[in-house]
Amino acid sequence: MEKMFKKNQKAKKKLCNNGLPISEVPSKFVVIANGGLGNGISVHQLTAIFEKHWVVERTNTSIHCSYACVAFDSVESAVSAVTNLQGTVIKKRCEQNKTAVLYLFYLGKMVDLNKTEISTNTTLPPGLILCEEFLSQEEESLLLTNIDSDFTSPPPTSIFEKLKHRTVLHYGYRFRYGSNDVDKNEPLSDHGFPNYIDGLLTKLLGLPHLKNKPDQLTINKYAPGDGIASHVDNPEAFGEVITTISLGSTVVMEMKFGDKVTDFVVNPRSAIFFTGDARYKWTHCIKQKKTDIIAGTNDCRVTLQRGTRVSLTFRNTLAVQNHEIKLTNQLPDVKLPDNTTEADSMEKQYVHSVYNDIAEHFSQTRDKPWPRVVEFLSNLDKHSTVLDVGCGSGRYLKVCKNITMFGCDYSKSLTNICHTKNSHVFICDGLNIPTRTSCFDACICIAVLHHLSTEQRRISALQELLRVTMPGGKILVYVWAEEQNFRNKRSNYLKNADTQNHEIVESSVKKDHSSGLSLPIHKNRTNFKQQDMLVPWKLKKQTTEKPNDNFSNPPTFYRYYHVFKQLELERLCFQCPHCRIVESYHDNGNWAVILQKDS
Ligand SMILES: O=C(O)CCC(=O)C(=O)O
Ligand SMILES: [Fe+2]
Image 1 (cartoon, helix red, strand yellow):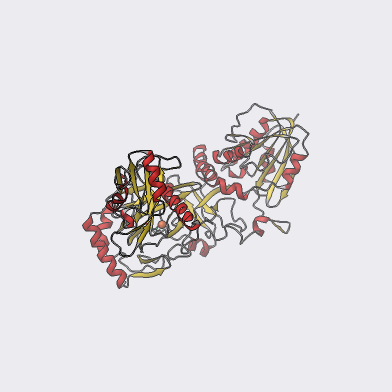
Image 2: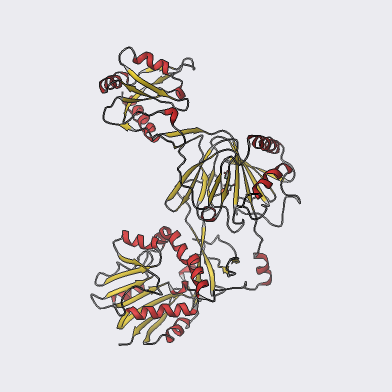
């Protein structure tokens, strides 16, 4: 009895997951779990049982459904049927000696299962271009025939690999799982792809999405139940657009970015272009399942059986820049902004937008207050009103009970996190703080100035801090130091090498072709080799999901930094009128000053 109850509950849960409007209140509409065509039970068999006792208005099932829906003539009939038929064992129509156990539940409304179609109103991630019916059926079957024969006997110009959860063929360059890149010195052949790809390539290049002819192709073959772990195709190794052609079977792709998740159906013969955010910020994956349950019309979910699916992923490999730098042992050229427009746009791309994207992860990993900042706040007069400029996720806003703290930050996502902690915060640019002059007893500005990309902006930020502070009030400023090894003491940043981010790129350069700006990429947890650079931030791996191969690759973001040399911060302060430096010191890889505004 108990076993039957458990099975009943399990069946109910499954129906709910399928989107059926199960109701606890009796109604005339009933769903019969296990009583559907998909489970080998015909409508005929059901009506034969019902008609002896009750009047049925309509019965509805579909070959895709293991359940059937029934509309009785009245609630009473439905109640009687649910009570009497619960747990009935019925012989399957087409499978001899096999039976099904029926479980019945009320529905809030009648559902027409055959009218359920895949819902098309999924919002795709920004930058994802999905072209349905990109190939004709003839083109698809010709490709499949050729690809099948390559899988059977891989040509010498290809590399065949059997991964744990799919088989793959690489052309052009071998894709190296682990580093998720290619060896540019080892092309697989002079002529790249097999001839049968020519037509497809011409067709792809005819669309505006691909700027250059791809030079690397991975063909993935998925049996039902196979998948690909969540990843971003390595931005260090491959160009701006990744293209995937699907053949053979429908599948659901899942894309994620922060707490945003999108599932969408990828049909055979479609082309997907991953560009922009979908290329660089959102991860994509295919779960290891034999069926996909997806949103359908009519409040229902549609269950799709997967068949064998083949996908072709085209990539453009990037040139290797590392070698030259290493060989000559010279620092790369740096081209920084030299006007306000350039500085604004660079900070927007490499500071503001990044903090919005990494806010959640940043707040989880940067929540410990630094002791000397807490000490500064604790030494302020009781009831002081203090502004934290660039407060991030608010780690100093609640550390001192005796003072009133406000925070401001450019990042909406970070200020949202502060709101959840009930802190007083507002969004603003530190160069234009929207408050009156002289309205705070003190200010702190921790790890902010180093994100401003010209000296003039760093001075302006100090002047703005001085403006909003009361005459006689104090300001504490911290910036990242070029000297991470000071007086023979290594900073925590260096000491914590090997624990985080160390796997990221060797020294290389990021050139922005549209703006002409060029910045070196810093190797995390190493000494700084230059003052201006991009510092990688790798989002944490999704721990909820076991990678099905070593192809799990969360996105990397780049933050712009100008690290300060000894006395550089003091020099900037000297250029600000009406203040004096009360104290300056090195603190664990940072330079700090305490300023006092003239009375
Ligand atoms: O099979 C697919 O559609 C995805 C393939 C993919 O993401 C890749 O090869 O990087
Ligand atoms: Fe991919």
